[in-house]
Length: 135
Image (tube, rainbow, N blue to C red; front, side, top):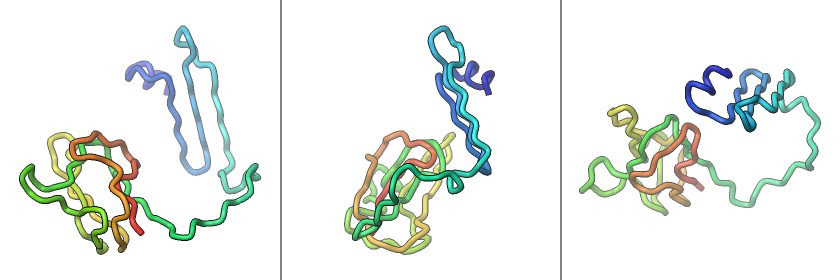
């Protein structure tokens, strides 16, 4: 992991898989200052905060499944796939993400109404980044 950090000029990296969590952070001079390892899943650890009640109108996020560039429409002169207030069905294309010169249609996995669009046309997006909020 340290080699990966050095090769990609990263100052911090975190990996979590099957309850194992490893976090490395470089300090001044390139020395790893902090290493945190936990073998127990987060659900098994006691919570320091009281659970918060769910909001009255829970919203579901449509997240980016990849790193790339967000496009709201299939072409520059075409209307956007969805707008705030649009009804969305399961499997409906909501946007396109360009990754490595490939245009990937992103489909909704839930049914609902677009409450908010969180990114702008042409914005770079990260893996897992929320793109839309659905009611």
